[in-house]
Length: 352
Ligand SMILES: *[C@@H]1O[C@H](CO)[C@@H](O)[C@H](O)[C@H]1NC(C)=O
Image (cartoon, rainbow, N blue to C red; front, top):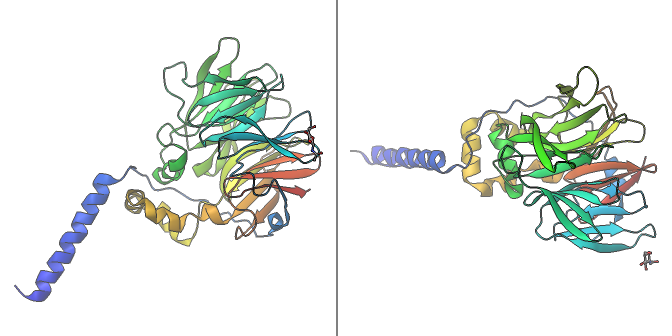
């Protein structure tokens, strides 16, 4: 056997064993992901934000403006922190862990909070109560992500993925199989029912101004659904907006009845090819070190204002993430937009 033949058989053999390793060791069993073609023309308006609490807020994912004029956020060091109207910050309640995401103010002035690891929580001055960690069909709530309380006290919330946890959320995107759900917590029975299953990473949840429908966002489907709560379509869902130029994260109702949606950049030249190939995604998930190099989500920030008819009216971005990156929430309050992020150590604030 010639030396060339010997070397090439060795190369082929190692390649095959590599492929076998990938196939056997990958934590995902992916499907190719169709990507939208829409893009935002960069305006870098988010590079002009004022930085609230800079240096003290590690990854403030969501922002709540309460009726008493406080700004609340959960940070990766286990705290729910708040800013007084005079601008001073304090650690309010220690939750522990690093996994509190979406929060909303309840009618009684407490916060309803999604903790990926613990479930749906109620947090007040008197402490923390777990409202739900299992749905009434017995399925665990594995990734509580965002919540909203209706005026009758019902809490609607998302369970992003029943397969992957917070630190592996990008594997859910790569796998591109729907593991997300929309859940409903009834305070009178304390039961949690599943309203919609099969969502593509169920993320932000918001109620319309009249509370006749809610909107739930599906991150890797680049769309948000409308779920009717009243009227002849009650219990039915339809597409609210699709083909978004980024993966929708949290959504908040604006005072004029429109919605602000934070978008994650899930595409890039190299990543687009990977999204289209199940084998490439399987390989990438088997070697998590590779993910570091392609996560474009860390290098861009985007937020869009979407009218109640599902059309984009306004967009703000930081196209290279030089000031704000990985924006996960956008909240309009008293003429300003407040931006939460898993990639910054501050909350961005910008006049509208
Ligand atoms: C801001 O208000 C809080 C609550 O009333 C108070 O504890 C704090 O001392 C105030 N800070 C400043 C700098 O005025």
